[in-house]
Length: 103
Image (cartoon, rainbow, N blue to C red; front, side, top):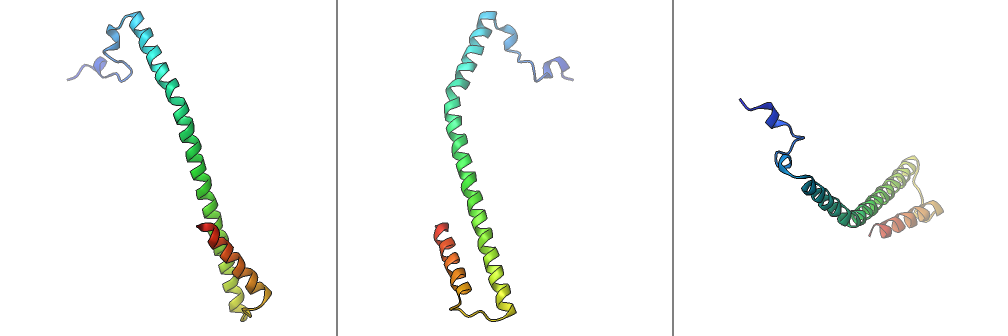
């Protein structure tokens, strides 16, 4: 059976052999690595935030289109809407604008 002291994930067996100077140098190296990567990660975070904003806008636009289509369909069921009426023209214009913005 394995010795439980050797299975501790918080202990690195290699670090037990490092001197104080080596530990200090290792910490400095790790800190420099993280500090060097912060600018790249910041840019990536901004990029991903922009992607999320774009996806949200697309979803909202699609939801608005569905609402307009459902409202138009419901009004058609109640009675035939004249395609030359102001409501029909406004609906058509809104749908064309929404479709143009999707591209």
